[in-house]
Amino acid sequence: MPPDTYSDQLELEPEHAAALFGDRVHLARRYTEDLGRRGEELGLIGPLELPRLWSRHIVNCALVAPLLRPGRVGDIGSGAGLPGLVLAIARPDVHLVLIEPMERRVDWLQFEAAELGLTNVSVVRARAEDAQLGSPLDQVTARAVTALTKLIPASVQLLRHGGEMIFMKGARVDDEVAAAQPVIRKHHLVAVEVVVLGGGVTPELTRVFRATVD
Image 1 (cartoon, rainbow, N blue to C red):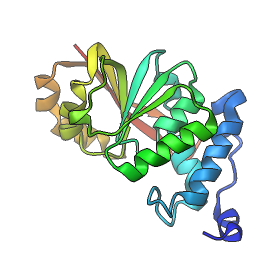
Image 2: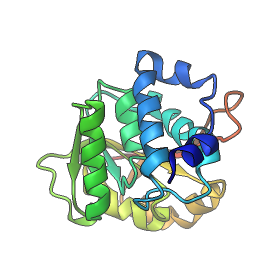
Image 3: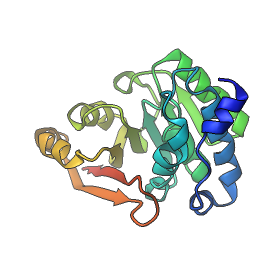
Image 4: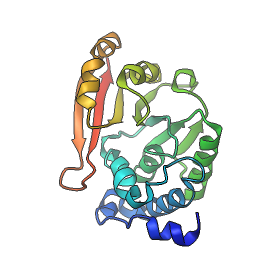
């Protein structure tokens, strides 16, 4: 994309971004600029995302950061790094394991993590079902990957006992939860809830399916 076209279309940084990222907001700005400049070319974002890149994607992901606990958190189907790289920027006390099967996206994740100096990131090329991580994760997240009926079985084997799922979902999350009840029971998930984040902060609410492996 020509530089003038890119800069004209990229959404301006919203005021609440600084509060979400604190003294690491400069890294969020660099990541957003890099993704805006190269994302469409690499097939990471669609052609209509630049005017809403901050609000729909960056801020949307950053709202999840307070739900993370210090430890190892996997991001299934990390793709462009949403939410994995955003969470790594917002929470330097958490190690993010970015799990992504596509080589082109893995290359981007590794390159961008190095460019931003994110020492709390590792990238694993694999599907969640096949990932060999050495030790269980404390939490796992995902955004716009697949339905809960498939996502829960794929991710439960990655978590330790007492580990937590934090899946970013759309407006129909309650329907997904209802459809996934047999899977939720089969895998002994407890403390199941839907958390809505961002009210009064951003027009793009973040809906999170949250559950613990008993």
